[in-house]
Image (tube, rainbow, N blue to C red; front, top):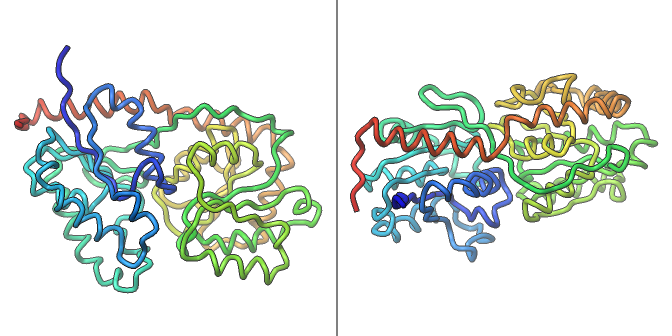
Length: 349
């Protein structure tokens, strides 16, 4: 049997514990990617998960520098992290980079000085373009980058539409997600709907205290439930029991939460940002709104989906078909192997 190439997988936080989209993305992809490559993971140790005084991106750079010699021992590097790819460019190893989400991650930095580092990530971006032999984009198309559809793999059973109740948001609790507007939308719904359907908010982030204060000010404490972080499979199970996934982001790539919701037949109501309109068809598998939407109009949209829910739920399952993890992973692995061969990239120990 031919020996598998050693591939280093770079991501800032563990794919086992990360709540954000990259963690589940890597986990679903690598279930089958391990059949093609000997995967070696490089992510921050778990003890840094709740350490928030220094940006994880900066800690990750130091972590990779400490493990630089080990990193060079791999045959190729697959990076989900711009700062990871930056360090990888100094290893002389063939690099595959996957862009996730925002064009410049400093746009949503919760550290004030982060906005002053946009220029550095623009430099990293150009460096990645010049050094990586394969580029992929999860979200909006980028020049020279192949489109990467979110791989979905789970065993969660699809629930009967009649057994579902409530609405859910899943993601980081940060300003760019505009969760406060979702709470305002929920407050606009008729009382009979709010009595039957609570709003569940899954995730953690710097906006948690502001959101809890907003809920309190609107007297929605009994109807808005903050779930905190949870493992990905638990989240999908909880999502499968809800009527709708609600999103209101100002900008996005393509959230894993949307692909996961569609895969269990849960329609999506969202802002039409990033790559979301490609998979959430307005009036088919959900509804789309502009970033500056009216909470009252969004609330009316929720009511309209509830009125024709069975059809929207069936269409959500149809919309989830492109996310099959096995097929996505097979194509990805083959493109890497063909790319290595066609570019005559050196693989040496």
